Image: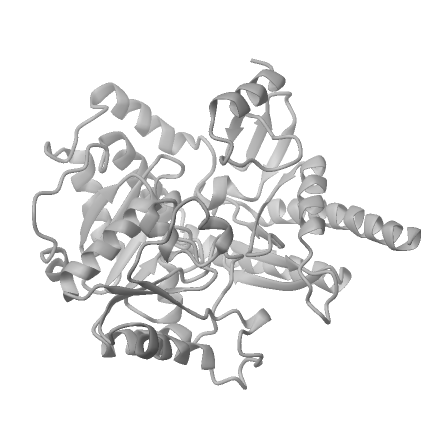
Length: 438
């Protein structure tokens, strides 16, 4: 099909709520490692990685070769038929997860993984109420939307009950008007205040992304999760780390983002980068918590042998190539480049993230911090024109999110910074022209 045919049929046959980037959607054709090509043959450096999903490069032959072999051997087996793929992956994960977490429940997506985690916490504790964070994002289902703390992602269904939200540790826009570190991490105390005022006082659990993804890569201060963990345990809950975007080395030097805050959670959820693009979701926990989830359970596609082979191959590659260290080293180099752009362009109000999960928040004025969603949309367009793929997020749609494959080089970063610089210059030129016209 031509590009025009694909776009026309996409609009005709898919739900209109399925959104796309750019004023004219980018129709992808093929990809290889850190590059993507559209149907017209234009090449792009991919610094979004399919929404924080491509861990080790598009169509990496060290992954796809094993996937192709598995398709020819055993393409499907539900959980009622054990197979080597699901067992090998579960054993691998048990070796990588922190603390005594060693049992897995496989599903198809991060949404399902989070659903499972909430059900599990409720079954384990005997309590019902859940604490989530404002600006968080947990998925598409009714429960996941209820956990989500952004109005833009909660509009298609009425919220479920039993979920309340605490303020998040958004240092750039502190909800308490304070400044770190003089604030004493006061935002962490809000979790207890919410429990005492908006719940029965006994909770099933607390769920949070170590770094909020769709929320705009909001990164808490070092003390935050330790304080919250103690509060959650005090009120009877399980601590759930939503590692759908931060997991598998993305934040550098640690397999899971929450480990950067020196916290061992009770339950971990994962998806996205686990299988380098193959559809997967998973929930991990300690054996005694897993045992509390009683009744018959099956999953038709959870733990699919092809997906499991892709996931294990991905984890093996990350380990063999020491990509946790590469994410730290190249991520730090990337951060330096972004800080340099911030010094150059007042449009960038904040740079944040960790490892190869970096974001820049765009503002109309660095003093007032008024969000700049129009400029963000233009920057996306200019970056595409320059040959760079980036993502966006944030409650106001004014945060650029970047999460390239974890095996990129400093040379790739240099190219990304060069293209981003060009795109920012074009946006600034438009801003100045607009102000001059007034």
